[in-house]
Image (cartoon, rainbow, N blue to C red):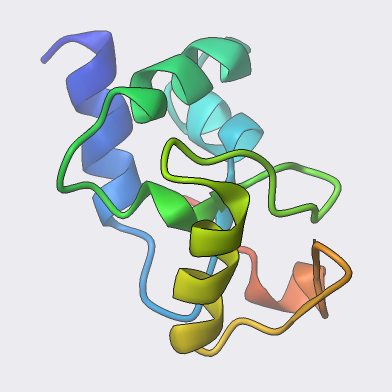
Length: 96
């Protein structure tokens, strides 16, 4: 499995109503290449990459626009206030 496929496999593990970070995915892969994780997700299709946010709780970018990412997260029950995930530490999904 190549780097991108590993990123996609981990991203698919994040359940609805939860988020993870680029850094969490990188750590789960045993690397610090969080920017490479973001680049992989930018090219992803059919992957719930809207559930991957910045480590400071900000929604961050999205290939289809930040507004769409925010809307998708809200539909899944994630509360967002001013572009930041409310109760961020409670909704972050950590890989085991």
